[in-house]
Image (cartoon, rainbow, N blue to C red; front, side, top):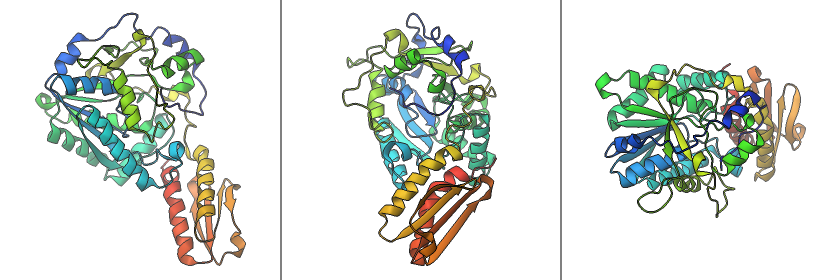
Amino acid sequence: MRRRLAGAAAWLALVAALASCAPDEPTTDSALMNSLAGRKLLFLGAHPDDEWVLMPILAEACLFRDASCHFVSTTAGEVGCFETLRMVDLDACAELRTREFSDSAAIARGSSEILGWPDLFYAHDGDGLRRGQAVWEEQRGGRDSLVGEILGLLRREAPDVVFGLDPRHGSTCNPNHRATSLLLAEAVRRLPVDERPRVLFENTFSVFEAMDEDVVAAVDRGAMFPWPSRDDPNLFYDGARVLPDGSRAIDVQLASLRAHASQFPELPADASIEADPSQLQIPLLDLADIDISEELCSPLDLSEYKTSDVTLKYIGRVLKAQARDASGAIALRLRHLGTTVTEHGDLESSAHRLESDFPGRAVRLVVGANNLETAELARARALRLLEPFLLAPD
């Protein structure tokens, strides 16, 4: 059921531990749902689909226990339509994903909000986390400004409980997930003690590169595992429980996935969650119980995942298709480390040639057309795709 990551070596030491991660019997914290009844709940993630694993908890609380739900994403996830839909218009992707976020929130009768931070796609390790944080700080006025945005959100919404993704690993090791939750933790610390909400983090393990085939097959059936090789004090919400309307709580995840159709376009219409009930426990951790400075992703050796050199070939294909389909004749060449990644048309015969260099990434883009305005538009369109991946600081 999970969208799989690709491109990194497995960390086999974790795999053996997975078999013992799921509880033998349902271990739902019976006090959890009672503690959410009638409360103001806030979900804070980095992308519009980050809430889907936690949706059964939020839906039960907000549909059947008089709680209220507000869903917030720091970014609109505008980079997320590249591979799923081959969508190259970042603004169109952002608009689509914003609507999907609203649709998913509506499942829990909730509202939604996008903060508008840039969507970044860097290595899924500590280095990628630091690179992404630096870009956000540069573009949003510094770290204090970022924390201030979340602090303002907390003061405005005054939630009793905030849900997010564990900042030590972000469930998938996505650095945007981790950075958002780290900033959340810092914002909470800046509140007076008597105004601080409880913060509960999703603690699922969703790094497919570090799973063996049996575990991947279980997850594809809807199974969830807590982060392995840890002695963390997990709470578990029993996704196999039956809600007051007669439905299984876990099936709310499917409803949320369907709402995010741009991210899960291959989800079958008749998809169902068929994992063993003992593996339908959603693991949660309380912020107060963990050391958020722990680094749990770098040991997984995911440094090459979605870095600029890996992504460049895909963007090259997109640029070539754009040039081929453009109304005016466009030529282009994209080179990396002195090697041509992609090219289209005859640059030498173009009356106007425009170059853009990214020396820190050893990337050069050359765009040509017989009309200067056409060349400028083509270059601007290409840079819109390239810059999110190439302008990150080291």
